[in-house]
Image (cartoon, rainbow, N blue to C red; front, side, top):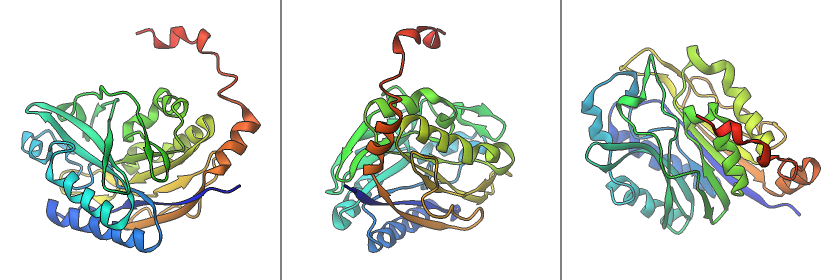
Length: 280
């Protein structure tokens, strides 16, 4: 028996200021809801530029409390109004000087369900993230939402299979991977890693990437956001590599049981033999 939910992801370019960026995303939520979307995820650090292209403490001002800051409150009201689940990738300030790359999850009734903090923090040219973020310390939660079990993995995390597997073991049905990833660095991996993770862990993945070149550097964010199913098939077309685009797709979650019954990857795991994998 099918169990179809309509899901949305949104890729866009930096508008030049925080408030207009928030407004663009609010309108995208309204547009997605008008198309029947029940759940939606934004791109990494959605209301700002990708400031990690430089190391400048002025950008610490983009961080705010989760869930008590104004952006979460604002989108809680919107989620409640439209009856849509929202995943908000944000810059979190736990306390002054303690900052994380975080996604807040809001249910369709506007209630705050919790957060995921990015675990793996890069420090390479154009991606100076250790200047801005501590590594995540809150595990890999799976959120029980109005549409099903939702997980989040953020950008650089996707290169590490362990978190993908942890989300699968916790029962995730859809995992969103909001990103800011550059054409010259990682494009050859973009349509490889997330489909592979979807197959290995038998869930849907929504992969979101921003678009454009921002004034802080020459990173060329190449969009091409997509949904992929647990057989590594794209659900509909992949988004533009240059333009703002709202992607809305129907995902049949009943397919997860079909694939899991066929392959039995979780049955055939050998955690008793994996001890060396966790050695430092």
